[in-house]
Length: 108
Image (cartoon, rainbow, N blue to C red; front, side, top):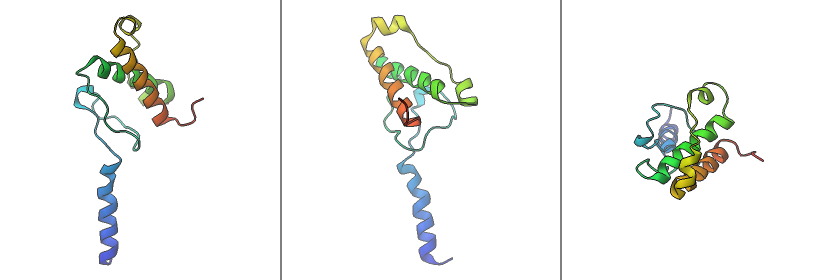
């Protein structure tokens, strides 16, 4: 291979980090597949908003994924907490919407 081809390959491989962002450590999901685009700045679970975002995102994953991902993730819909805590409620709906539309763009 020539030098130009090697440079292109190296640039391509290093550019993968531009569209792939690691999951926040406080989510404790271990190694799970995530979509390769559109994922940036997920909130950590240090706040009620972040906990709600994580719970809403997991419900969205279960609603639109098939196979082992939908079976392994646990869904959390805590109506009592949503009613009492507006930050959790807002985070839940934001996480649900973001994770739904990142994975499935044809949702009606």
